[in-house]
Image (tube, rainbow, N blue to C red):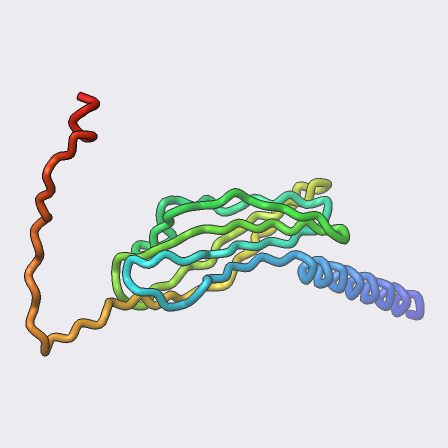
Length: 165
């Protein structure tokens, strides 16, 4: 009976230790996504910053990004991945320029990163938080009269424009 209690205590201690080690590991690895602002005028461009902090001995696979992050949010430019090694961690950063040509409230869904432990090939999935973007249209004073579109101004040709021909 005493031997069984001793085995149970040892098993419980090992289980708690394993859970604690996994919890510490999970706190060390972080991914995040941040918008420059959460409200833009239709057609404006803003930055989306993706960051990941990974301990040594792990490989990080970035999410596949296409030409849009959602049906209403388009990717204009995707920067290169920058990395900094410090205190046994590698911090990755990537800047993306986005825009929207629709007005309303839109979400940037969580982006999934894959984390691979090089020794065991164990794969974990880390997700960023969901982001919200408000795209608004310019204010138009409908009480004022609408103005017509002006035609292009005609300018005469100069000698410098004709000379190369």
